[in-house]
Image (cartoon, rainbow, N blue to C red; front, side, top):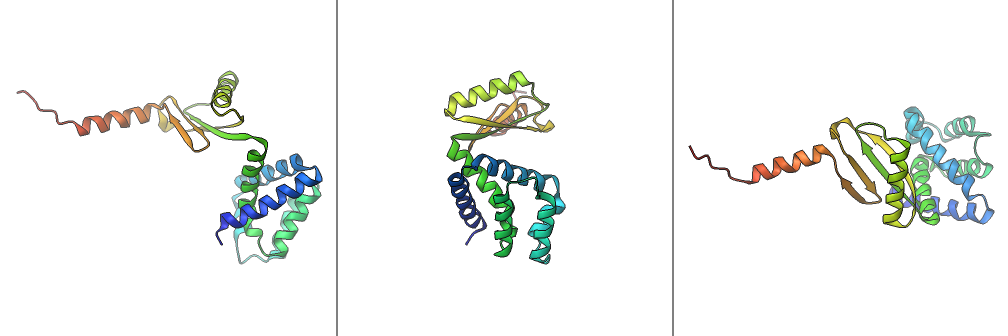
Length: 185
């Protein structure tokens, strides 16, 4: 079975249980927090994925990091996956949980990539535009890419709107390469 399918099944079960217990918002914050910690600490991510590190050691480390900072159900979930020797799926489970949570709440993830950070006013304007397009609440993530030269790239779900100068230059280069210009000398 693929890693994505396994992660999605665990995430779906956790979502249903959290919803049933009335702590869905807390668990969602815990999963987002876990994902953020894994992104910030490559060592933690690699340790969780490493098959050589003993499962009990992984659980001890997870408990030391997250004890008192996450809901008891989240910690119990970490223990369950470790006991079943599936803790290596935790980063994917957290990501799948967040996706399912957003879907459950009618939220769409959107990413804007620009050359420099955008102002709060522009951020609100972009969120309003995405909300108008999708009729859903928006979680907007900002990324910086100086290779764009100017403009922006906006991803909404699986759609992409590219108004960057670098993409316009690529289009011009392609048009010029496709035309046969004959000099009149």
